[in-house]
Image 1 (tube, helix red, strand yellow):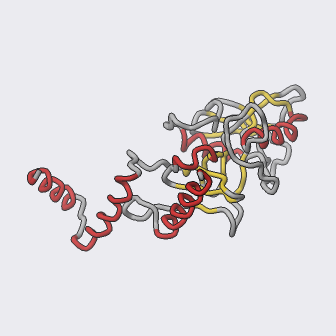
Image 2 (image 1 turned 90 degrees about the vertical axis):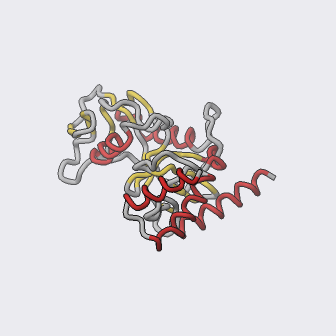
Image 3 (image 1 turned 120 degrees about the horizontal axis):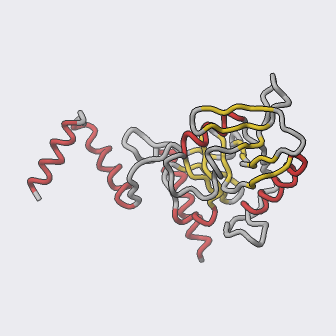
Length: 229
């Protein structure tokens, strides 16, 4: 045991951890030992709880039935998509997906209420590229992106208002074009975080939630426990 402790000391010195930082590392370890993860993803998992979207850097098993997507740079990519949709079916498909993701559809396993105040839209071509680039190594995502070499309906850039189909070329680029009359593409719905209402959590320098995020975790856990009883 003592030899193992010395090895830990050596490792801390190797990573230039000062004596003053030990208390912070102790507190971080206390958090991590209860919720161990191997590494932090580039995205945050998003939960819809009591009308608010929470993008959290550590997953909360207690809210697993309220998981609705992932967040990247303030954009929530919802956990649902539709393949091979024609242009005239986009609005209808977005409405159907909203019901599916937020449990207003009989064939879904998600367990949260339907948020009438949330507006689902299509991502831009850049946002599709961000999604693919940041999730390519992830094995546990639920219905976030269908295929890394696909066509997606997107929100057009102001300079090219007719180019509403983005072709994703692996993780390096996307090219946009005007759709043909019979063209079909995938729908990957997004929601943009609402300033002053929705919450994005952050980690501190020691890899655990900062003070504000820790407080939000505590409130969410207390609320989850209340709902159980």
